[in-house]
Length: 123
Image 1 (cartoon, helix red, strand yellow):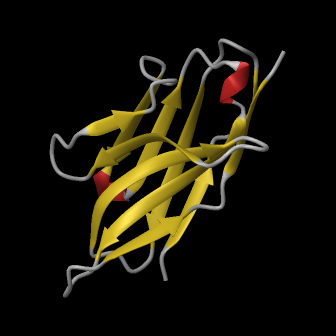
Image 2 (image 1 turned 135 degrees about the vertical axis):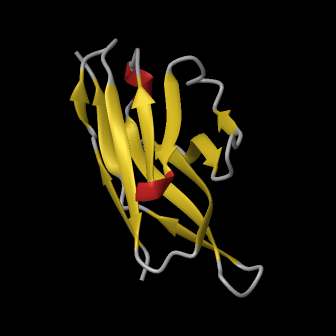
């Protein structure tokens, strides 16, 4: 089984920083990409950032977090991070880790989600 374990969420004041981590474990052949999504109360789940697993792989960020958030990976540890700086109240949401896996003997992909971690930005 594939499991995603998130950590790093919490309560922070506006302008503060947090770093989220997501460790992927289990039956993994190859990771295609990893990303972070968030969902605020009453809103849809939206993409925050994604990163490809290839060397020098591209990244993509939501316009609302560009220049403030940075996604990175430690491929040897199957871990993805989200460094969040200059946090704003509108960043308050449940943040979900997502991984897309490539199966060993097929072209099929597997998508797995973390349980989510709460980030609250408030004074």
